[in-house]
Length: 172
Image 1 (cartoon, helix red, strand yellow):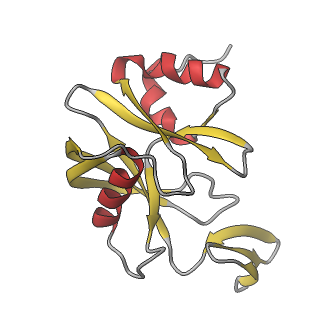
Image 2: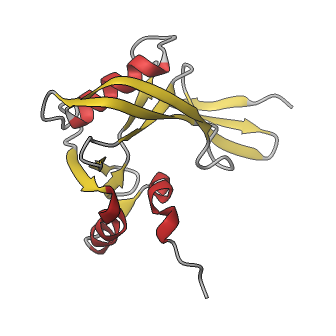
């Protein structure tokens, strides 16, 4: 059976394919998720209000690719988004692969990139609608920082598990 569009907005569309219902990005828009570590071994994280969650969420910097310019390349989009959100410019980015975070519900994936040669060029904070809080967290303190943020009621993006892998204890 062929997927049919049930509803489409500016950025997402709802799809139906047989019994499956799922969300997809409109217009071929993609996403880049950025791992940026400063020369002082600090991981750059962002915190921002997420409407679907109704609260702030702690995340790796990320942004849409191709939302303003069709066919946009991932590397320049990632560099642009990192600077816009965090105030850090990457001299280069390394593409680490494509991933999907919730493939049973959304078709959207993201390209994971590592930012290199970081230079602080501004304050960050995103565009006028984003109100992003930038955190520079020493890599060895990530687990404790995430624990504190969770205790404050901040949601934690699943992609942060990448940084927590060594600290996760098996459940009893």
